[in-house]
Amino acid sequence: MKNAFVLLLAFSLLAIAVHGEKATQLARVIKEPAHFYTGETFLDLSENERMIYSSGVLDGFFASGMFRADDETVSVLQTCTHEMDARQVSAIFTKYVKDNPDQWHLPFTVLAVGALVRACPRLAPAPK
Image (cartoon, rainbow, N blue to C red; front, side, top):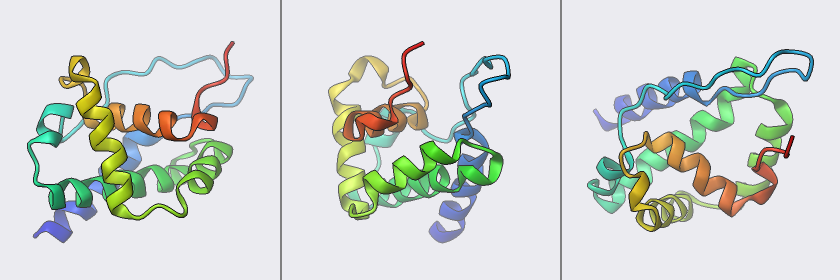
């Protein structure tokens, strides 16, 4: 059952992880993504459940290129995290969420992006 949930989660995250547009297109408005967990509900999971969920989130971000996410961003994410295991990714996400209680109401995927940008500064959007 958990494997089916993780698979469903990964496919769902693909749809919300997409970002990146050609420079010639207008900037898009990013709405709050659909989500299963907020930062608070993520913290309510057991350590093992957080590790599994974190793996699914990261897998979804990796696969976002299939939905036209910017190849460079996906490549930077893969380069930054290729030596990390699921426990380390979960620890990075968990620390970020715990350090930002003012954001616990946000979708977990939004917080995961913040954690990844902190861990991998090259992921930060370029200033305009």
